[in-house]
Length: 198
Image 1 (spheres, rainbow, N blue to C red):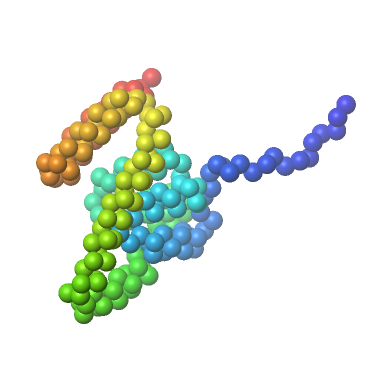
Image 2 (image 1 turned 60 degrees about the horizontal axis):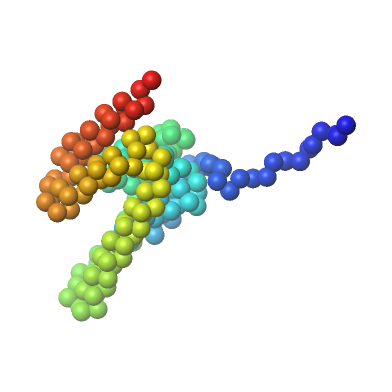
């Protein structure tokens, strides 16, 4: 007969984690915001899902969708939701303050510098280059999120159709985002509810 094992199971690299305190939320969102120049979506996904592991890929998609349709900046909505989920009002305030406080000072300083050198060719070129980087970051994040769509209850074909129905009116026809979200997002919600209904 073998004696009972006292070995602690090995730590799983994919085990979900959670913020340790409101201070942890404040510092994490401050660091996240300071990296977010030119396109914050990719940074948020990498920090929350891959590094911190506070959200799974699927949870990030769901929370980001909710943050997207709420008024205000998406990442600010997400920070409030995440902070409130773990520490209530204290967590929501800590996350939102971390996201806004220090970056606000940096942006004000940069705005003062930009006002002095806005017409300089090097500054104009730098801003154009950052625009290209932002587009690349958003595209890369979209490709990463496709892995979560493969397991969606609607199935890949219907998700692809809804993706096209969202992309064409927003990117090519320049329709207002709110109307597209209301119609296409509403269809997706109804179809998902029908699939999940017992």
